[in-house]
Amino acid sequence: MSRDKIVLAYSGGLDTSIIIPWLKENYDAEVIAVAADVGQGEELDNLREKAIKTGASKIYIEDLTEEFIIDFIYPTLKAGAVYEGKYLLGTSFARPLIAKKLVEIAEKEGAYAIAHGATGKGNDQVRFELTVKALAPHLKIIAPWRIWDIKSREEEIDYALARNIPIPVSKDSNYSRDRNIWHLSHEGSELENPANEPLYDRLLQLSVTPEKAPDKPTYVEIEFEKGIPVKVNGEKLSPVELLKTLNRIGGENGIGIVDIVENRLVGMKSRGVYETPGGTILYAAHQELESITLDRDTAHYKALVAQRFAELVYFGQWYTPLREALSAFVDSTQKYVTGKVRLKLYKGNIIPAGVTSPYSLFSEELCTFGEDHVYNQKDAEGFINLFGLPCKVQANMKKLNNIKD
Image (cartoon, rainbow, N blue to C red; front, side, top):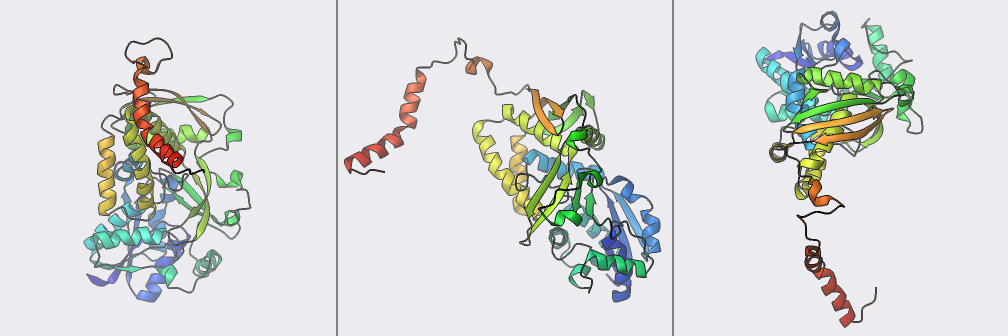
């Protein structure tokens, strides 16, 4: 390892724009920037020029979008994992992939340390660093927000302006955003007070508000194979194109806008607005398909697994034995989650409009209110007698002992 090489997780945002010169000033080291392309689009424009101009010796721009979808989004989608009932984990599961790439490049370059721009108040510091500890525990981690004297985004802006560093924000428009192909998050500014309604007209970038969505519903059909989406409206698409297509359709219909106050791992509450148009559609479709392909006990137990899975992802524990074991369980449940789901999208709402599967457990003949020849209703009496036996025993005990509730 070289004591004069540091690999930096670089996005070109406010934090990492000033971290490059700060690292050079304080560590007298060569800074190698690594930008992970996880589908953030135009945010990567001019990134190479910007990184070099602000002091990086070189920059790697790595296209990880398909790997992100296949290895991180799909396992989480199949698990049905949602953090605190609202958050579809868009930032959370991108971090272990980015950190994995940082480790690969640090080892390639012989660097002794990895740096990141996550704050000491946030979750991302944990997600980055747990991944580094799991994959390359010998590497030093440098987290400037836990070291430097800068205390606020306003002070960051002043630091950048004093060094003529171009930055993507101003003191008048001071949102902290994170974007990838799955979602776009917004924090800061008026969102720091939960009493404030978000200023959606200046906030949203992937979606329109439900009020501005079309007055007619949009129908979309999604086909899954073993829990993985493969077609939209009958067209087979690559993972990247499929998600882009659903993002466009969902965004046009005001789908997937969430305002949430969440419990961070470090103990505080934070408020953010998330746009996840395509992901919200996929979660709804996947849930509908599971409703006819999973048996009751598996479905109910999987819901418990989903909550724990979401916590592991949110807490940065992707590379852990438990997450891997839960993924193995989830994969086993997806064997027959194959079929087509039709949804109606209307002004921010997702309304089921039909689901089919060759492996459906739904039997119209069994559940019909009409006459059938496969179910003897008299059998229910014996079932209820046995199922209710503990209730009867408890009641008899209370009667015998003159116990009144």
